Amino acid sequence: MGDKTTHFGFQQVPVDEKVRRVGAVFDSVAGRYDLMNDLMSLGIHRLWKRFAVEMSGARPGQRVLDLAGGTGDLAARLARLVGRDGEVVIADINASMLEQGRERLLDAGIAGNVDFVQANAERLPFPDGDFDCVTIGFGLRNVTDKQTALNEMYRVLKPGGRALVLEFSRPVAPGLKPLYDFYSFRILPLIGRAVANDEASYRYLAESIRMHPDQQRLKDMMQQAGFEDCDYHNLSGGIVALHRGYRY
Amino acid sequence: MTPSTLLAAALEPLLDAWLRQDPETLARFAALEGRVVALHVDGPDLELYFLPAADGIQVLGRYEGEPDTRISGTPPQLAALALRAPEDALFGGGLRLEGDTALGQQFRELLAAVDIDWEEQLARVAGDVVAHQAGEALRGAGRLLAQAAGTLRQDLTEYLQEEARLLPTRIETANFLDDVDQLRADVDRLEARVRRLRGRLEGT
Image: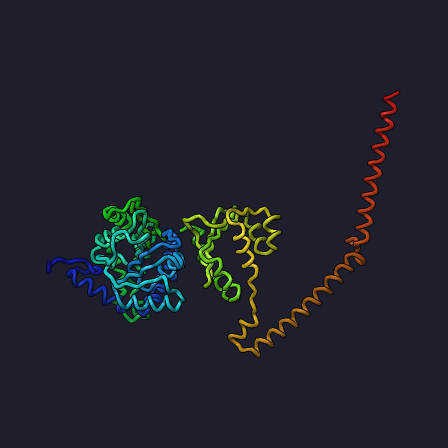
């Protein structure tokens, strides 16, 4: 058990170590997470998230689980869609991120139909068939065992429910990859150092994106978890992909 | 990502900011909470979904449920909906309204009712005195402008009709139109007379 390892960015670390290290990264960046998102993606992450919410098909009265919901970007929009009769549960393994999210949503006047749960995506504290929709936005790549997390997402979905995975992926647009690599390994850590004073965390973010399964592999993993009618949409030339799968 | 998503992303903050300037109308949006109004643009075949709520309006480029109301038309028709009186646009403009027509009407009326009190908004940041003076100055300038525009229009009319004689005056136009009517009646009478004479010729 002790010699089982997994990747943390480009390094190999023991499984237990990864959880601790990812936790440390997000404790470190929580305060400036939103600002950094805007800086790093030039604000485009808002469009990616908006698209994900539109694809969620969330309707009034539904129950939605937003995994790794952290600072509540997806949840804020979802909460308006499900209305007063619906409910959005934000789950995140990191207490600092949840704290940020709670304050942000309260400040935005979004309350009453939003709940916060500190939970590990690999072991969700919810019964089977509890949600109409499960989303995870820029969170799956930080989960130690991604397949288990996908299995759990499948388990808590109602029949007819759908899961959405918004995550960095492989650029497919011609000529984009070298530019993107230069940006994420040279520029990104610099921005990280200048704004959040934490170069290492942002280097980890860039590396973890490279270690994340590409479009087809993630789709295969979703199918393995039991999802049907799986598809994906490349956004911004494949820098980000939105995967969707249904439970029937 | 579809054009509708991008359009919705661009439109929502604008619309939201605009509505926030008129808290009273915004409060009336609460009555429409939970309803969905779709706006279908015929030419580019775009559809946008408006989800009003008490704290603003959400605009989506995709909605999987069935909207309560769908308003469709070409871009100019839809623009007219926003600019003209609702009856004109809905019944004269060739717009199609499906679903809950009352909701569509109500939604449009609420949008039309947004009345931004600029002075009040300015007072929030600059204080009452400055805002009032700025308002007075603006209103004065507005009156002056309206006066100048009126004079200019009158002068231009006189020049074109009396000096350059490029355009007829109202009375000349009316007389001309009367003459045309007179001529048409004369022709009709002549035609009838010819028909009657020809009939008599062929009868004998």
